[in-house]
Image (cartoon, rainbow, N blue to C red):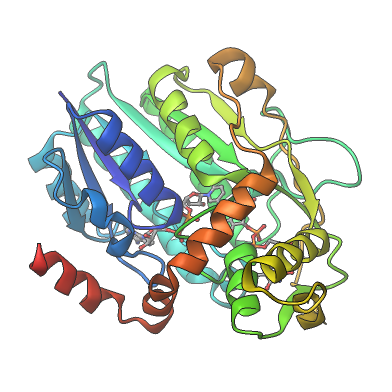
Length: 349
Ligand code: NAD
Ligand code: DAU
């Protein structure tokens, strides 16, 4: 049996990773550690909440004593570290909370792994990171694993720092680590502050669709379940000390995505074609807005055999359907009522 600690498992990507691991590996004991910030929602995991190989622990990765005690009592074999402050706009408004969670939190976990694993073999600290550490691209080119770090927002700088710490623990203490840097994820259970769920929610409610600047910034979009599968592959077959880029080979200008969403949602909501697009509103640009991200995912493809499974339009349809079918989820997570809701659901089982 393997004991795996997954941090941030109540968040968007983390909940998909937890579900995949709990269902696919019944012989692993999965502990989901999450502070349940505004972005963490146990409703995301109701379907596996009572699985025999799953447990949830509420706690803060920056709390050194708590983390030390957890490692001492649980004897984890591996960590998959996703807990983070993840939204760029919030990092511009409140950089220090990003420094605390993303840098200090990662260092606390690394330190606990170093202390409790005593250099034993068969351990793994897997750090889940972002393509934003590489900075911003011009019209051409891709981020490879050799691209120099050039983070430009407080969020990406905090993630870059955490990546450096992970590599430093590998080089200095021989801690067994692996890192992956992924592009923009989309899919179910994403907090409606990020581009896609925000736009979907606003279209449903006929609210303005705020497009930053000219809408010509480019992102490379990946279906979240494909990211979870990539994490599974890297976790089991990635080489220690290596970095793997994960991306969708799927670049879109923001404004084109918003138009595509409007078109699909006009159809789904029975609106006249062009109705939702009238909501598009160009607003002040994000400070320091990175122009373009594009991942070269050749290494994970050729060395580990991973490839994205879904075409973007199919993924978008699924994502939109999920938000349309789960308006209560959106209501709970945006109203803060979800803690009580989860508590009631949990009690009812
Ligand atoms: P999210 O904001 O949806 O979830 C983050 C989770 O971490 C939440 O459940 C939150 O409660 C938890 N958390 C925050 N602070 C904590 C703390 N101090 N202690 C314990 N738990 C804490 O984020 P996400 O979009 O799912 O991203 C997950 C990870 O993947 C992050 O590390 C992020 O940098 C990385 N990533 C995200 C994307 C993306 O497109 N969303 C792409 C590449 C990499
Ligand atoms: O690239 C990976 C990163 O992708 C992750 O590391 C981050 O955690 C994740 O939040 C995401 O960062 P972005 O800043 O790219 O995602 P966001 O959804 O916030 O914005 C996507 C693009 O859309 C970006 O160019 C800004 C723009 N945007 C965003 C919002 C929220 C708008 O034009 N209007 C909006 O209201």
